[in-house]
Amino acid sequence: MLVKLQQLTVPPGQRVLLKDVSWQDFEGILADLGESRNSRIAYENNTLEIMAPLPEHESAKVIIADLLKVLMQELEIDFWPLGSTTFKNELMQQGIEPDDCFYIENEAKVRGKKRIDLTVGPPPDLALEIDVTSRTHPNI
Image (cartoon, rainbow, N blue to C red; front, side):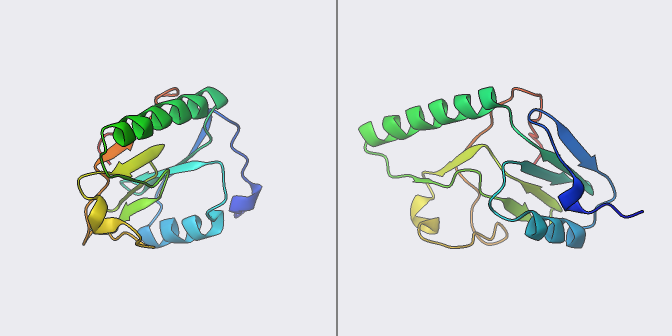
């Protein structure tokens, strides 16, 4: 029996681990999940994690991100916030969606780009991860 992604429900604070997921399958799953979703993904060692954040997680994320934005504005530091953009690198066979992220030092290199290719361009200078459910993936 084959399970379709649309059949999966991930309650807030819970996660689903899919093992033996190829890079091509990972790309297909990302496309199927789409951009308008409440879940976050992490992909490493052919394992895909799909997680739905808790309200306390989202609240902390917004407060900390807002504080960072105000601090950078007050210090007149140019930055470009990219939220929970999906970053992936096929050569490294890894993908992640931080809770929030910022380009600061490399802001001018990526500002206005519709796609960021980590094999060519830099990763975010600052990635924000709120760890309420021990989901953090420091290796990715």
